[in-house]
Length: 491
Image (cartoon, rainbow, N blue to C red; front, side):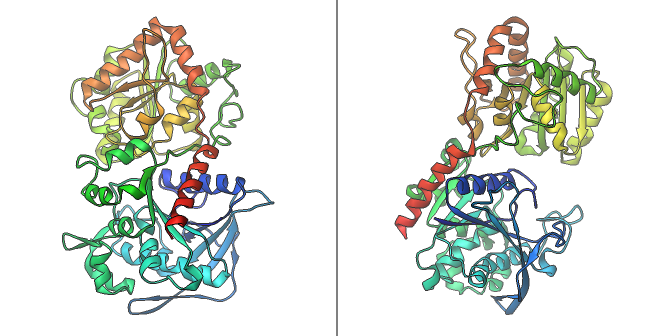
C-alpha cells in the first residue's frame, strides 16, 4: 500500500509528546513490512532548511478568500532503510509556521490562528500529492491538527486521483479537540452546509476533531481500553455520542515502542548495558541515577522514578497536592528515594522545588532531558504513573522493557499493558490501583516498597516477566495494516 501520514509532529523534527514518537515509529515499522510510506509535516521555525531539499516551484493552495502559497521541502526519515526509505515532506509557509512553538508559545499557549494554520496545512497535503504525482491508498491523519484532512477528502478533494483513497483518523488524546470560533470556518473554503453535515458545530463553535470523527472512513485510538472509555460520558469529553454512532468503524490499537531506542541491551545513555540474561548493569544504572540526582548511594533502598508532563491528566494534583497520602507523606513515611523529571504547570513545578528543598529523599529536575529519562527508566526500582486518564502511555512500556515494574492507575493503555502483582502466586508485571486519590497512590507505592523489602525474589521475577513482554511496533503495525485494509474495503 501507499500510505501517507499527515501529522503535526514527528521525531526527530518536531515533538511535544507521544504523537511524534508514534508517527515516526509506525511509519518505519510499516516500511519494514514493505509498504511505501511518506510523512507530511509543517516546516516549523525550529526545523532548519539547511539540510532539506527544496522541490522546484511554489505550492498553491486554494483557501477561502484566495490562494495561499508555500514552498515544499523534503528529507529522508532517519532510521529508514535505503531499500525502502520513508520520505518526509515539509510545507513551508512562513506566515503560519515560521514562529517559535508548534501550537503555541509561552506568551500565547494556543495560537489564535491555529484553525487557519492547520486548515491550510490539511489542504496542502492534497496539493503536495498533486505536485509530486504520488497519490496514496491511505491518508492517515493524527489528532485535531490534521482532522480536516478526512473532511477535505470527503467533501472537496474526491477527484479521480483520490477516488480510491481511504482516510483513517487516530485519536491520541480526546481531551484536545481543536475548538475555535466558527468565524474561522470560511477560511476552509468549504460550503456552510458542510459545517453542519460534517459535524463541525459545537455549541456555536467549530470543533475540528469532531468533524474528522464524522468524516473519516475509519477511526482508532491508541489502546483498546481507552477506546472503550471514550464511549462513555465519563471519558468521552462530550464526543462519546459521536464515537458511539461510529462504533462499528472505531477500535483501539495499542501503540508500540521503538525497541531500537528503548532497549537496555544497547542503550547508549546508561552506564552499563544489561538484559534479562544478565541484570548486573541495572545496579550500575541505579548508582548513576542516585549520583545524578544528588542522592545517597544506597543500593538496598528502592528508588521510585517518574518522567512526566506536570499536568492534571497525569495525576499530579493528587500526588503533589497538600492531602495526606501525597508525595510528602510517601517520602516521610517510607524508606525510599523518589526522583522525577518533568515540566508543566507552574504550581506543580514550584511544589517539586519545595519538596526537593525540604525532603532529603526527594529530588526533582524541571525540564526534559533524553539521557536522564533513559537513566530513570533503567536505574529506578519502580516507575510511577498515577494518570487520571492515559490513552496509551509509553513510559510504562519502557519501564517493563528495562525491568522496572510500573505502579499505575487502572486506566487506558496502562490497564492494557500492566498486569497487577499477585503476592500469593507471584504473578504479574507491576502494581495497579483503581481510585485516583492520594491515599490510593500512597498505599500502592507502600505495597511495592513492602514487596521490595519482603518479597524480593517475587520482585525480581516481576522484572524478568516485564522484560519478556513484546511491545514492538512490528506487532502494532500489522494491526494498522488490517485497519487500512478495512478502510479500503469501505471505499
